[in-house]
Amino acid sequence: KLDLFRRILQDSECAMRIKERAQELGKPLCEMRVAIKPAFMMGYHRKDTSVITDPLLLGELAKYLHEQGCAAVNVIEGRNIYDRFFRNRTVAEVARYFNISSPYYRIVDATTEQVSHEYPRGMAQYSVARTWRDADFRITFGKMRSHPIELAHLTAGNLEWIGARSDEYMFPERQAERETAIVMLLDELPPHFALLDA
Image 1 (tube, rainbow, N blue to C red):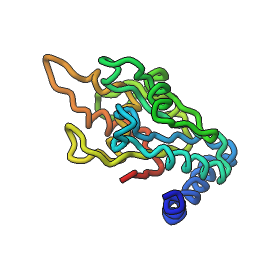
Image 2: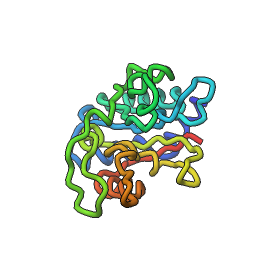
Image 3: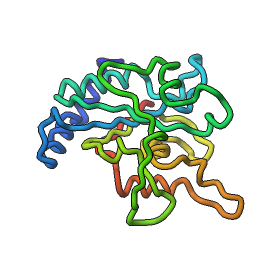
Image 4: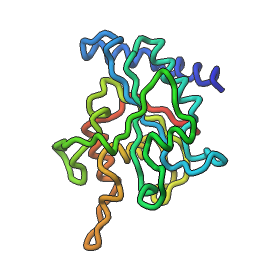
């Protein structure tokens, strides 16, 4: 699968997209800050990895980015509602449980690095993870899976924990749509590249 994944990265012109972005920003590739948003926080047991982005593919993507010249690669995930009910649910703890680690990237917890951000359009988002905001090249690397609200969870929905926690938008007196919060993030700080583990 790693050989196939490499071919997909080449066929999708990922390296060319990064170089174009570097030229647009006037930065050398070695100074490009890359953020990858995989999906692994819905994982709950090693026997069922159907809901997480394949750790081998994630590591291979980071290695590929390093080979292109990108030295600063961050893998960013955010905590979800599971940590309200279970222990050991920080991003670092879940990553360690699923053996998500590589010398080619650093793990970042989006929940602990939220910074205020003014979104010019809409409502429902007031913050964003600093690493995502400051990245020069953003990649969403989702996992195709079922979802309690969406028919299928793909690369756009994968960004739901980059801003404020989705469970902060549950109110007894009104309904707030999580889609609105995601769309505000996509409008203001969109990914530059998308991959789907399916």
